[in-house]
Image (cartoon, rainbow, N blue to C red; front, side):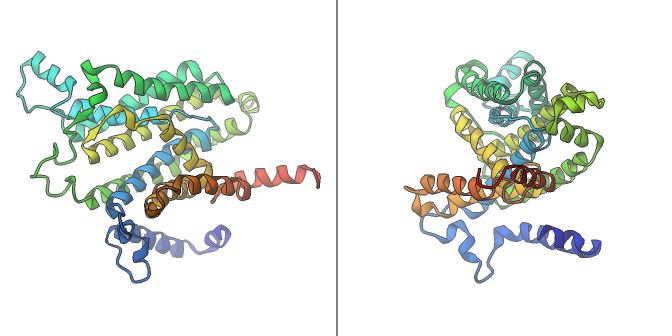
Length: 364
């Protein structure tokens, strides 16, 4: 299928991509006969369809960031939820008028009671803080490899959650932070576009961000930095001999992945209007890794599909709530047995697995 797509003339591929993007923007309004059953609100007790699509878009953004770390640089990060939490708490603590940080700034500088950092300014703040967090984590730990790195990153995600929960003086503690702003400010009846009820504008905003990030990551993958990441993933020692400085490029991967995680956390917190520490647990971090592995590590289309499916399918089959986690686990096992390279693997990764299978003698 991929070979046929690449064999098409460029203008046909552009038309196909444009039609696909238009269909993505149309999804919240989906009413085509025969496809309505895809909507999560078409079943009894189903969730808000546009809200589910927004979650899918945020998860795709997370998968794109984690794919930079795992799929391109080959670094197993089990604590990616920590960067997600950093981005969410950045907009909450600086943008909400009820956050301890904003209240302390108001008191210290004698500002008005309704003062808070504008949502647009919170975006670069969240990205910068998440990127700095990635550098702080990566600087002492990226000299580790394999399982050791995975354990350290898993601890980082738990440290963020526990510190936030046990620091009510500046983070709100277990009670969390409310009144988190969106593009129109704090949640209120005046927010007639980016409100809490209608999620369609939020989905369109998140989708637009995803498309921009896909373009940027694609360009980055084909750049000198992207080729250095692939060389490090294949053989770090050989890459070092060829003049690639592994630590520098691994730190870049961690920082860029953390920035995308922070951006996704900002969108998540702004849409909900409220966050609390238990939303950022280790189980969520493992789910993020599963998106990349199931979809196809190293392939933008693959990780996007994996993120969409792992966010959409549990909501679509909510009527089987008592069994959906069992089915979810069995589905992951089946995919890993039948498609260890992922649903849509990168061409390089598919060739690697094929070569390894050919190296193993028959019957072994």
